[in-house]
Image 1 (cartoon, helix red, strand yellow):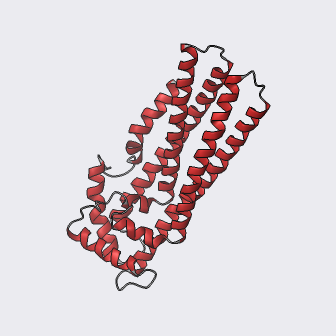
Image 2 (spheres, helix red, strand yellow):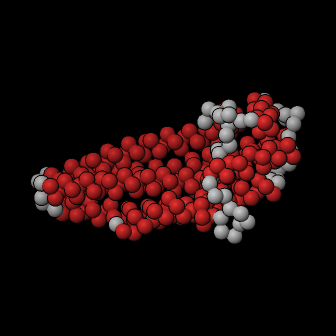
Image 3 (cartoon, helix red, strand yellow):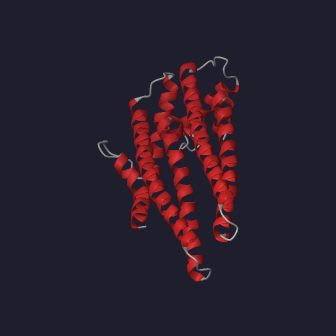
Length: 265
């Protein structure tokens, strides 16, 4: 439990500091990061080039490292919580008490399992962000109320995306690079969600098999395995929906990217 708390605390505070190591003048806050991102993004768009200018490359590199460290910590936290959850559920099934002790064990096991699922979601999100850091970085842009040169750049991007893949009058190379990266961003999540769905289906099958071979007198075990089987199947269905949705977006990223810059995503 102490290890889980340690990794949880590190996940919350360490990535931003670790990502800044070796960088000149890191970003002290997200506001500071956004302030650096907006003009760098405008410069990239106005250049019409596929490559990032130095100012934007610095921000993207920082955000990539942030996601890598956050992904490592969330992965470690997932492992620790998963092992702890298994031990707690086994202890609950072995215990014969039906009073306060049994309820405390069950409640603790459920709570740790929920945190493990949250850690899994965090791991998926950070792998996605590390694999497509540019698209992840642009999510920080103040798209709800852009101003100045940023507002002008976003208007041009929206006009270009509205007719995509027809070649826009301005910055076709940069626009294509942005669309491709956004497609990769969603393709990564589609693959991750598919893998998680397969694992959850496997867990559901294992739970139902355990339920089938457990004698009727072991009511607690049968009830627990049945609950695991149902919940794993429902979670698998939810993740499959995510995988299908992101597969569609990865295949046709331009409309979704247009929705993003319009503030719809």
